Amino acid sequence: MLKKLAKRNRVITRSKTLAVAAKAAKLKKQGEDIVTLTVGEPDFPTPRNIKETAFQAIKDNFTRYTGAGGTDELKQAIVNKYKKDFDVDITLANVIVSNGAKHSIVNVVLSICDPGDEVLIPTPSWVSYPHIVRLAGARPRYIYSDETTNFKITAKMLRENITPQTKLLILCSPSNPSGSVYTKQELVWLAKVIEETGIFVIFDEIYEKLIYREWEHYSMIKIDKIRENVICINGVSKSYAMTGWRIGYAVANKKIINAAHKFQSHTTSNPNSIAQMAALEAISGDQSEIEKMRKVFEDRCSKGYKLINSIPHTKCFEPKGAFYFFVDFSYYLGKSFNGEVIETVSDLCDFFIDEIKVAVVTGEPFGSDKHVRFSFACSDKEFKRGVDRIKKGLKLLK
Ligand code: PMP
Ligand code: GLU
Image 1: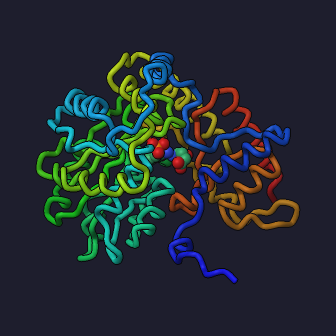
Image 2: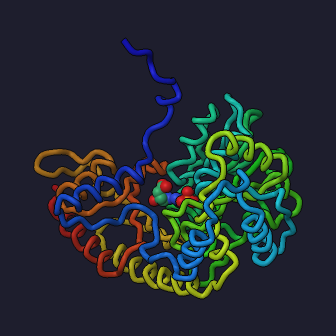
């Protein structure tokens, strides 16, 4: 006889982005020729200067516990970065370094939300936000947006969705999965509502360096009137091709950082000491590799956009940042393959991976029952191979 597991197991499911990437990796290992356009991670190696710093950290025996919220040196580098990039004055007490940005978000949501609180999540949104919210016992409340508002919410949409239970809003710019970017003016309008209602806002800017053409990143922390309400989430995974190193951070008012520190000190202790040294070099060292990678992504974005638009009967918003295409495939729903009806975009993605060997992510966990997410963090050749297969595959649907 065994007792039941905790109820909180039932309020969340495994990350779909990671699950489909794992399925593709398994099929590849079994010898299948899979084109993988799934998980959002740069295909570049981590820049050499960052890796050398990590080797040196091991040689120097920098292998012990550090402060639970990260080293003062790395926090100082983050303080300097926020001054240099956004011209805001923060101190070490406003920063916590965690095991990836995902971990920072967990600690912050646990610090802010009580059971019964509502958290506003504009969709389409990154898959993990609602799960993290439910883990804290709070309730996600979605604000649906689509191509008609460029996958962004307006101040009016925000105001209409705030209830007495609303505690927190989670915004992401540049956005995973749509690639939309909020302008300064749009954020100022949203900030007015935030100021009036006193809610907190997680501003996930992990893709800030991956921004294209004339678009510029504007950080919500620059808006003085809501400085205390804003929690910036950032990290080295995307901009510095360091997904496996697991370093992310939050910048927020001292009370929130203090609370997040308590959770971290009893759950994980410090993030990996060597990875922290590497992140210090990433953030404060030579930035030239980062710009080189950004340019490659920008080029892939424009080439990939043309290819995506060559898929018949689909619609795609042109990404302004990040490295995803979020493509409307609703035309194909209701069609069938070998007599089996493709009812949902998840069925369509199963057809793509099982029958034509292309792994992409269904829009459903991002909050859309029409879209499919393609990552363009891969070579042009691989991306074209994937799109060509999809075009051929769609012809098989009746
Ligand atoms: N936020 C967004 C929007 C993301 O796409 C990701 C992807 N991993 C994260 C946060 C978490 O990043 P990490 O934990 O790798 O730092
Ligand atoms: N954020 C990336 C993605 O959306 C990595 C996977 C994850 O953590 O969800 O693909």
